Image 1 (cartoon, one colour):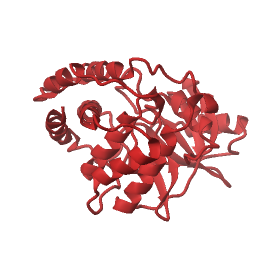
Image 2: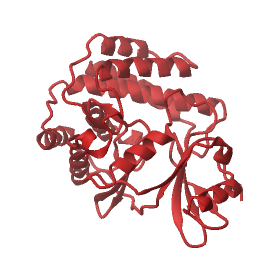
Image 3: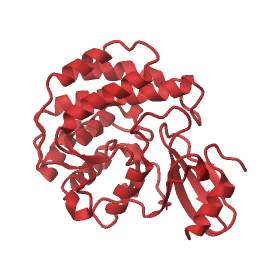
Length: 314
């Protein structure tokens, strides 16, 4: 059986040597993701998950498998639920790119609701009160100047993926760059915290996934993305549900984390810019025929509403 992005014979040999699986493997691509590729992989007795970067056009600094593997390993024994990590491979001869193997965690589809949103806000606050040094992540990022670098980074990523004119996106960048707030105490930042990047079971978070953009920095960038996804559930796979009071979620997060959220509007503007740039990158890969799976045909239509929202916030 052939699976895009995996050579099952080479993968089986590697994972057997590492003591993860035994014998021939089968695999299936988990549909719905728009970035890294995630597979359910099985031998005769065990099921694991393999994760690797997308095929084709990959932006510099994005899709870092080693960072995902390291941060989830560091969080194994904290109050933030993550899968167990089994193996990391940076030998590109095995699968064409670095990849890692982790525990398969079962989850059930859970629409976004006020109760689910509150639980997510609590999990995010728990992540942001962890002392990075206490879990071996004191060198996981450079908190100083984090927001300035974020604004500049996503501008560089935009320039690397430009394939059409996007009205207002350069104006949004200029406004963000001209009014960068001061940051509070740094924290472990997930980088894309949302319902679609968690596995839910019985209305609770069973595992937080997709740590490819994690680092040390300003935690309000996570909160702003979470708020934006809650306001625009069509941006978050699996999040469709009833209306959510994001003001209440923000207040709950602030109470749990002790963070000052008075300038959250700027952070939401940055979140809009970031998601617009990421979406442009996916759109670029789609136009080049380099995406895997369904659901990409209308991806480019998301960019303009994100830019418009961002301009209203900053």
